[in-house]
Amino acid sequence: MEPTIISPRIRLASQLRVGDMLGRGGGQGAVYELPRHSGHVYKHYYAPIDNARTSFTELVEAGRRLGPPLAAHGVSALWPVHVLGPGESVEGYVMPRMPDRFHTEIHTPYGPDRQEATLEFALEPDPDKAFYPLRVLSAGERIELVRLVALFLDTLHAHDLVYGDLSLKNMRFATDPIELLVMDMDGVHHIATPVIPDKDLANTPDWNDPHRLSELPLGFDLDRYKYALLVYRLIVVNNVSEAFPEDAESIVVPADCGLNPEQREGVEFLLRRAAAGRTGSRPAIREWVGVL
Image (tube, rainbow, N blue to C red):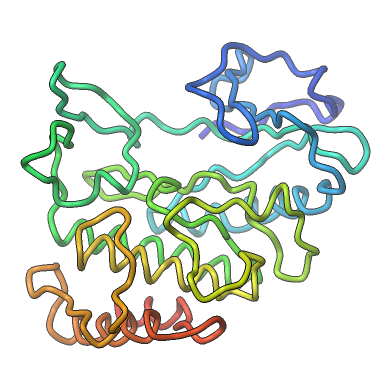
């Protein structure tokens, strides 16, 4: 990945030369080409986020510190590298461009189509569906992705950082070898930094904790709940949106999931604890790392 070469003198979005918009805009903003910096892109917010400079500066520093050790284990993340905006407001930020290897070929009724390889495409494909990946992951590769997500979250939590908007859509994967890419890093925040609603409280539908009155972060618990749900959906039910069952003891990890009997027993135990638990009681990510 090329070094960041945005001049420190560029502090406002109006000073940055941007190109075409990439894809379609999201709920908060849109991403643009940077013609002079091909290895990076610019995410612009539709409305500036007030009082967010400190939080974003912490993210830039965290990316510099945690990016290299995570990359050594096959985990990359699109950390902000240059923040733009007047005073304490943030108009947007520069981040690395997603490498091409985090795409996959999809079968469609209209012919093959190359799309971003979200973790939804890591599921075992349904033969009755019209859209499915041509490169199907093995059970062992799916477990490796689950392990890499745990490694990523455990690293963040060890440095007092909360991810927040964990979902299958916010992760990408590459194959041969298996690698993980984490998107939407702008919602990451230090556990001691005051929550900034416009920045820190985005939540993908179908990933909300049903036992919480709000989605305000409480320590690392929301990451812990969502990670357990990710494991459940990827290796137990093979479904992008299925919720935990009301009877947590009914959760059974299939024998062909890619885990040995001891690991299956451990994962089953952690899933049942997470499903039956209430806010603040979910297993720590470190426990998952130990099992996987």
